[in-house]
Image 1: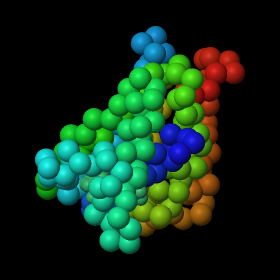
Image 2: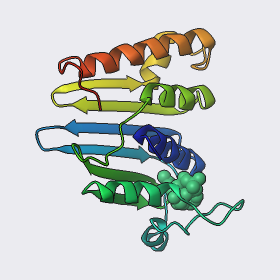
Image 3: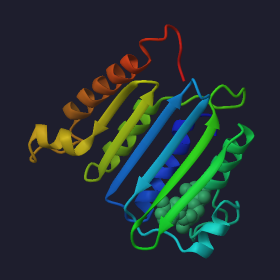
Image 4: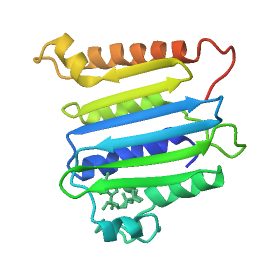
Length: 188
Ligand SMILES: Nc1ncnc2c1ncn2[C@@H]1O[C@H](COP(=O)(O)OP(=O)(O)OP(=O)(O)O)[C@@H](O)[C@H]1O
Ligand SMILES: [Mg+2]
């Protein structure tokens, strides 16, 4: 996968596949420690210890359509190539936390890519889930919390309403712009 946002899409799809109703995406870019952290937490069904030990292998999946599950093993390979790796914390019936660490400046670290479009895709297809996106760059932080937006909108208007999606897209674009605003020309 070329962009980290595509890994994020896969992680969120895994969470939704595990019946999560709440998914949190955390990104922490710490340039001073040369670290790029990506974390996805969910309240889905979790995995057993035995399964987790196998899950970073490309041959592990509960899919029935094909035998090979690639998402997590590709992420792990991408992170390891960049001096990091993937850590999985999970509890059956409680949820899962997947954490991927990369050396921020590593030549092979893929860019974050179009995270705005990725989040819009997730929200448009799953307007009912509670999605939190928290992105830190140094001291700056951008947060999108779909529950807060639903509260502000009133419960009658779904998040995948066209006008709402348009507004969300603007909000994301502006928020991410401000996140990187301090460093001219610098992008993840
Ligand atoms: N957040 C999660 N909660 C519960 N189970 C998970 C979670 N993430 C992954 N899994 C389990 O791990 C398996 C492997 O996930 P992985 O993303 O590597 O492959 P996949 O989703 O099966 O296929 P692909 O990502 O290639 O479409 C999944 O099939 C699922 O059973
Ligand atoms: Mg997957």
